[in-house]
Amino acid sequence: MVLLAHPTGNVFVREAACALEDAGVLAEFHTAIAPCGGNFFAKLAAWPGFGEIRRRELPGKLEKKLRLHPFRESGRLLAMRAGLGFATRHESGFFSVDAVYRAFDRSVARRVASGKFRSVYCYEDGAMETFRAAKSQGAFCIYDLPIAHWSAVRQLLSEEAERLPDWACTLDGLWDSEEKLRRKDRELELADVVVCPSQFVRDSLPAEVLERKRVEVVPFGSPPVLECARKVRREGPLKILFAGSMTQRKGLADVFAAMALVDSKKMELHVVGSPVAGRDFYRSRCADFIFHRTRSNAAVLELMRSCDVLVLPSIAEGRALVQQEAMACGLPVIATRNAGAEDLLEDGTAGFLVPIRSPEAIAQKLELLAGNRALLEQMGEAARRKARELSWADYRRRIVQVVSTTSRVLINGAERGTGVPPV
Image 1 (cartoon, rainbow, N blue to C red):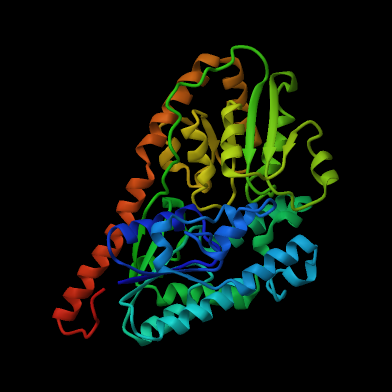
Image 2: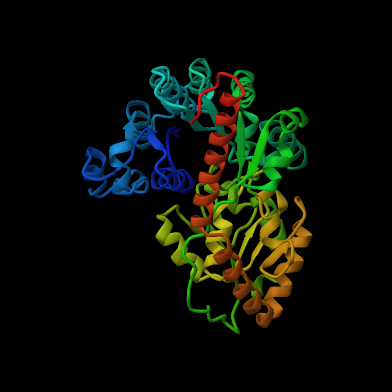
């Protein structure tokens, strides 16, 4: 039986939990806050103003397996709402994201030390103590790495800070302490299997990890695909969407630079995301973009359906879910391999794969689509087909396959006298 643990939860964690539950191998699912069934957070999420909690809702079938660790994450959400920046300061704040992950990891590790679990499935930054406890009990450690390895991310972002020093303030990946990086390395050392969402993440792993560890690439799924073909507007500006944190890790500076290279009368840039700098910072670099505050996933999908193309020239990513969300809505995508888009766009039918740090390439593709609405429509249809190929059902199947294969390996190992128990 498997213990699954992630402190904040998201769509791919929920899908993994459901996959393991449906397969009958989920022993417990540990997270911080989750409305589920009739629990306290389900009642709280029904009140206005609790959208952050509401978006973490879990299917009722997980209620009996759910184990919550709410204290530190609740404090983080309250501190953020109260504007207590010192309490959520990167790594050092008592209610920082890092503090949430460390406290959660310690709490789950105490549970794992009971020896009731044959496998544990954990995620980056929240696995070290849990894996140590698992190893002490002879349990197997499955490690999910949703973004490129820290060494590759740091190299790429350091280069960005030199290339675009005024955007360095948005590159939060440069601020991680050596202690935090050592924790990441230790997690990888303890892992028996590493799960990655894209080939880009796999390729970012150090050579010794690829040589010594079993590494599985399991791409994320897509939301339900828009069944009716989108009606592409034949006239008017090309409506371009950027969705994500407003940082240069996501390539926003290159999007702004590309907009300066195209005919502004033919283009309209919409940005939905979380600013990490002041309004003037962004307006001084691109005065005319239309800003949309962060919103529910349903509202983001509604905005997507009103746009024509998604642009995401990420510098360092894992597998940006927004790409497949856009494709499911019938939008072609302009993205980089570093966004985890290689298999989505490599054949050029559902969008364009562009190099990182190339506003010129982005501008060229935008001009092409703005001037050829028939091509835009064709690519939108191809995007829907590609999104349909990558379902969450397939993701769930692959996750169960990883766990099942692990079980067989362990059983065979025990039969050979290794003393390692099966899952």
